[in-house]
Length: 362
Image (cartoon, rainbow, N blue to C red; front, side, top):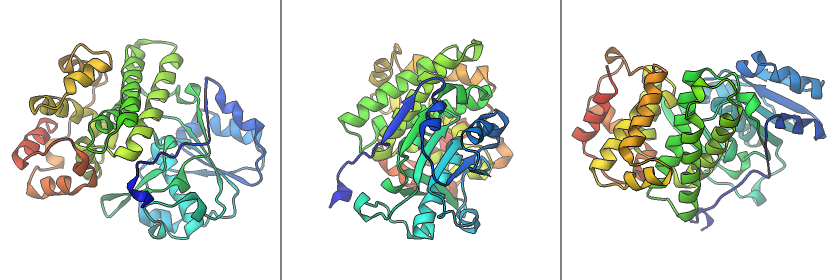
């Protein structure tokens, strides 16, 4: 019965401030392992954590979205008492999945929802995002790829115990990645707000998150000191992650889930180029994207579209090459069968969806 209620599982502790990675040094860890990205290593944060905990084991993960066969082929990490993840959404998702695997033995055995009372002792879990997009640090959702299909695990088992939102950790993000990850977070908030499963609490989170993201992106690519705006983006990403964790997302993510693996572009990239088209389409179909736009500080939806397009132009975010994918009935059906499509606010016919897809293909 509990599965049918709207439930939020929050991390136990959230630390938000420039330099807050220092929170780690006050923890008494027994047998920790650090899962990290190559960028976190390159930027010196892995060494910083290693200095705090000389006995910690380091395990580098790639930044690609996790695949089921690769995850199940990795060693058993159940002997570790603490899991620390520092990296982007894929690194945090992979760490969540390895944590789940360490408890269950096999990812296929994780039920959609697991109550706290049913979980045997699990590792203490710390998440430190180095990008501003996935919001993976905020929720109990992790997505892996299996035979070119994205599959989610949803469980309070994998909600982090401690989240560190430190803008200095995100300082070295290249502009293109900063934009695509931030717009990914924006689409979490936007689609959560318009989801068929939205509620007053999720809508509040969505609006505040999207407003922070738009304000955080404003002129950030021209500023020498990005830290104040990176902090806004971290706030926005975190709150958007909370919002979408119970409402799901929608058509934008359904499209990117299907297209991203086929064209070898990150789904944040696909979300970025599809967002203006969906804003236009929803507005044409009577979805109140005008009211949403005004609520986050824009004059109307046209101004919001103009802002997004200016970010895309400024960072040379390219469209999909025409030779990489063809828009046919098989692709349309795949998108419509994605679970996120079901929570979109309106129905769409095949021809309308085909027209939207043609707009993002060169």
